[in-house]
Image 1 (cartoon, rainbow, N blue to C red):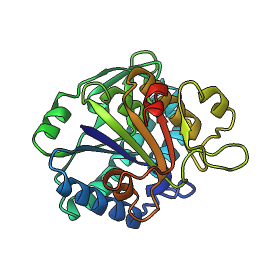
Image 2: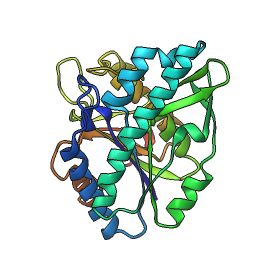
Image 3: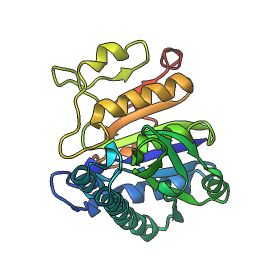
Image 4: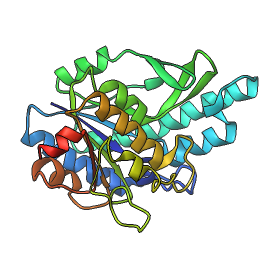
Length: 268
């Protein structure tokens, strides 16, 4: 079973301040992943992270998500990729520091998109890394685009392309909120394709700078994933909470908001 874990940009950076890295949260989560991995030799984990105040600030400044057509926009495209890599290296160092054999996979080198939708993604090396007990690290990144020349792809969009080839059964999205909230500010325990329309009106965008759509886009992407892979379960939870991954993956506690297929929810 493969588990995809995303460290949200709002969790690992302060999205209101450029290049603000929250070492403490990354270190706390890295230690939990190391413990989980040591307790279950068969568990395959891929770690992803958002670009937060690194990539999103640069992407907004250059309008990268909308495409690249001028020399200045091409330079901006390169700068967005550079800061996304800068953040990923900071995360990588924390993973290695706790004994995780992590390996970075640069999405921009293997992804091609068309009109911001991924149409090609070579995951063979990443899959082989999992087979060899390596922990792949990926992140939201720039991508070459057949229609707009270049754009931004989110970690969630990358996860959606990994779900089938890696036989993913669990996706955990860690941010700085305890799930998805309704209009009254109450957490929604579960969202399924049949209840999505009701929940959709309550969804808001991301606080701070986010060029990939915030919470609304995350939930929409996850609903699409569980429609395509009905046995897959998604959890959106607060990554600041002590032992959040231990509770979810080792203690099997239900926390945050669960997104799954209608039949999968009924079977629980």
